[in-house]
Length: 94
Image 1 (cartoon, rainbow, N blue to C red):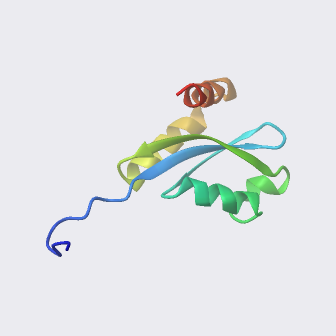
Image 2: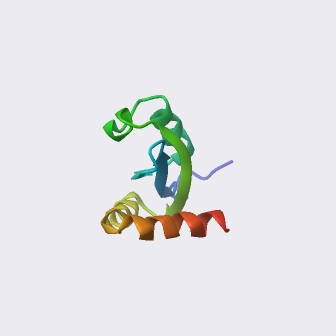
C-alpha cells in the first residue's frame, strides 16, 4: 500500500516530432506522445495537420518536467529541418 505522505514521482513529459504526409515535421510536447499522435491522426489537436495529415511519430525525448519539455521544444523548433532530420535519424538508430 502506498504511503500518502510519500512523494509520487512526477510523470515524465516528452518532446516529440511527427512527420506529416508532405514530409514536414511538427514538434510538440505531451505527457503521452503516443496518445497525442493518435489525436493528431484523427484530425484533433494541432491545425498544422489540416493541410497534410500526420503519418508517423518519428522522435520522442523524455524530459523530467513540463517546463523542461517546453524549453526543449523551443530549442528544437529553432533548428533547421536538416538538424531535425538528424534527431529523427538518431532516434531510429537507437
